[in-house]
Image (cartoon, one colour):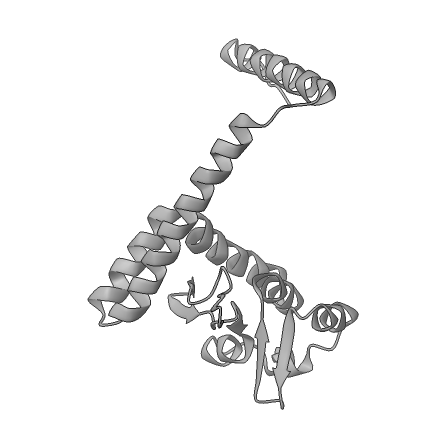
Length: 178
């Protein structure tokens, strides 16, 4: 029996400075493609990224190099690479992931643009993933609602509700609440 299991980010697209980048079937982005197309500093090519963090990510199979031709990275490793390039680039990459992977409205908008520009197959994949994510989130929410909390968890919830209520009252009264 052959089971086809795809990574949750397989085929997903992030947009950095107007450039779309699509994840592989393994849920990894081509760092070399990103580096080349954005014309980043030659000293910051993925092949030059040889820090302890890069080696750790490689050991965890979050980062793969293919004979120096390309470096493939998971979402986590892509953000770490971006941090190595510069703090500003890290922020840009992180926001690209947040926008597309975490916000269904933006992802649907991206899918629509992809479809209009002739990338129907990629748009269909993105829409399918969004539907699957929504279904999974619905299941997880229903499971969380039916979960029995321990007395300590119930007490934490009660305290958090009281703190949030007090913060709301203070803000309404025009006082800062940090």
